[in-house]
Amino acid sequence: MTGQDKFHWAKRVSRRDIQRLYESDAQGVLDEELLDQVHFAIHARVSDMFDVREAQQTGRVKCRECGEYAREPLRYNARGGTNAGRGECHPGKH
Ligand SMILES: [Zn+2]
Image (tube, rainbow, N blue to C red; front, side):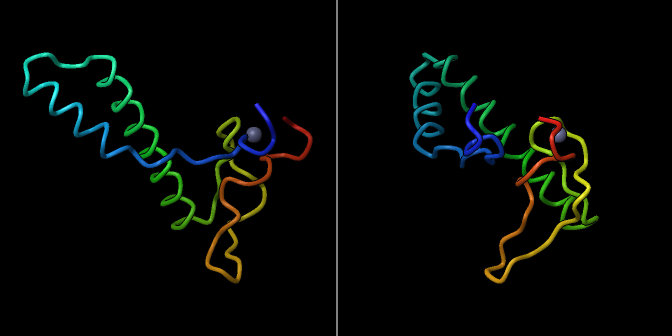
């Protein structure tokens, strides 16, 4: 894994995939592989939303690598972005 995508957030779940899933089910041939894919995509997305919510409410940011809390508190930049998901929990650990 490269440093660039080490701390990425889960991508949006594809509406097209969800539509294809419903269509396959309606046709009586549920695409179970696609079901797994959508299931994990939704789970990852929601889990990340909970991490962001926790960071907003408590100021504590979880390390994306190991799940430990970072020493650096949540900060907002001038554009409204945050430092959540960036950097390491403890410098040099990963
Ligand atoms: Zn860590």
